[in-house]
Structures are given as structure tokens and as C-alpha cells.
Image 1 (cartoon, rainbow, N blue to C red):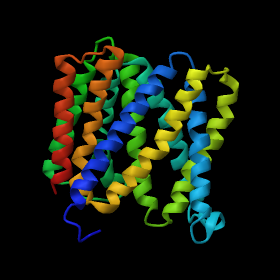
Image 2 (cartoon, helix red, strand yellow):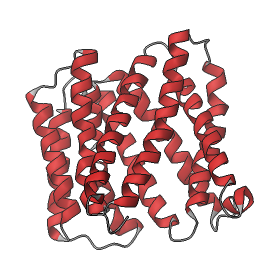
Image 3 (spheres, rainbow, N blue to C red):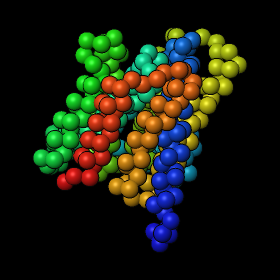
Image 4 (spheres, rainbow, N blue to C red):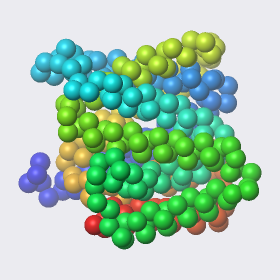
Length: 286
């Protein structure tokens, strides 16, 4: 595949499809959360995720027994716990604020990763990248507009969820140096499934046929989207693909307008633009 000159274009195409898949998943979650508890939605997602991960890992050399042998299992458990809570937080956020606004705030995650990487991974962050981080923070403030109706509590919760995913991402990079992919993948699926299943039954309500279809779709698209994402990174460099991850925001704006009638205002578009540009600069800078 490395000799295929079209590989970057194929990778970009897969990245665009992935971002559309994730944006659509968020939109369906927003629809379902109008009537179903977020914990129930997350639990169903994790049931399918855990089943898929188990089958996938069982087919790898060493199988399930080797996958559970983490060097620092409690760190894997903490990482998985952070992720399942973040999934629930973001599902709650998209249910209570415009889809595009939630995704614009979430787009600040790479900047948070950059800001935290010196403390977690010991990585050096240059002056230009710090400027980009500060600019991105300003963009987040423009989106939130302190004192506005979306700032508290939903905006704060969105930023907290974004920070949680940044910590999860850093822990993933840290543990990737110690454990196999199957180990990290399995812990996220199995620990998350156990945690979601410990809460979901207490808020369960019988879904309608349409809601059952919606639950199955978001559970399937979660697995499907990550499979496409992994394939994209397999055939094209991350430096080429990463800027296109911001197209999830574009899809979110489009879906928000077409499905929910949510038209972003100038402040949101300005803030989102600053966050995206700052994120790309931080990624490219040294």
C-alpha cells in the first residue's frame, strides 16, 4: 500500500466518511436522548462494542488471555473508566445544546492534548504551539460567551468532557508504549461495558421500535466508524489526515441545520474557526 500514490487520497476519503459517520451518530444520540436516558444509550453502545472487541481480539495471536495481561492493569482500568464517562458526558451535552456548538467545543481537544503533553508525556511544546493553544482557548471562550445562556452548566460540562477525552488520549499514547493494541482496545471495551451495565438497567425504559433501530444504528456506527478510522491511518500518514478530522464540525453544522433547525450564529462560527485554525497550527508546528 505504501507504493500506491493514491493512498493519501484514499485515506482522506475514509477520514471524511468517518467524520460523517461520527457526526450522524451524535445526531441520532441527540434524538434518542430526548426520550431515553443517556446511561441506557451508552450501555447499548457498549454491549455491541464489547461483543465486537471480544470477537476481534479472540482471533488475534494469544487471544483473550494475552489481551488481558496489561503491564499496569489499573492504569488501563482508569483510562477505560475515563472514556466511558466521557462518552456519557458528550451524549448528555449534545442532547442539551446545539450539535454544532458541542462539536466546536470538542474540536479543542487536540489543543488540550498539546497543553497537557509536557506534564503527562514529558514532550516539549514550542512557543508557536503554546500560542496556538492560547488562541484556541480564546476561541472556546468566544463560543461559550461567559454569561450567555449556553455557558452554564452545559458549556462547562462540554469543556470538562473535552478535557476528559484529552486525558484519555494522552493515557492511550502512554500505554501504547507498554501494551499491545489488543490489550488497550479490550480494556476500553470490557471495563466500559461493565461500568455502563452497572448503571443502565436502573434507568431502563422499553424503547419503541424506532428507538430500537436508533440504538442499533449508533452502536453499529460506533464500531464501523472506528474501523474506517483505523484503516485510514493504516494507508495514509496522520499528518495528512488530521486536518480533515475537523470536517466532523462541518458535518455537524449541516446536520444541525437540516435535522434540528439549529443555525449557528456569528460568534459560534468565529470561535470554531479560531479553534480549528489553532489546532492545525499546533499540529504542524514544532
